[in-house]
Image (cartoon, rainbow over the protein chains, first blue to last red):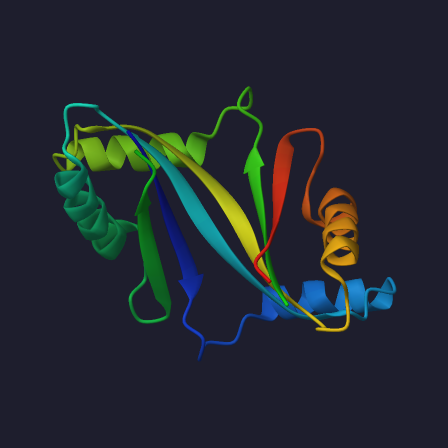
Length: 81
Length: 81
């Protein structure tokens, strides 16, 4: 079973890296790009023996405890099946 | 218009960061997780005046030229509308 966990900064947290990319692109003529925010994601393989519900529960815990800094980041878990 | 650009290491390139996370999770009892690979993604806002086709073309060029190291990484562009 495959799953994706996306982690990004909360909307209220500044993303200087994304802002730098946006400004660089504007300087290259891409003025149509008004905002860039960067996040990270994890492609996770799970044993096929795990049920979809258990996978979602386990990965939500893993995302909360290990992959995310809950003070500044938020996450989403997606089971691809 | 919103778009997502996902950038990840090519399948043939080792991902020591992902391997470290996988081993750490195994040590915490998550032996059901057999593989973790980490990538990055960009949430991009574009002016509504840009057509969907132009946005896809522009972002593919941006991903190729700026966001990706084509030697070791690959990307995908998704227009969310």
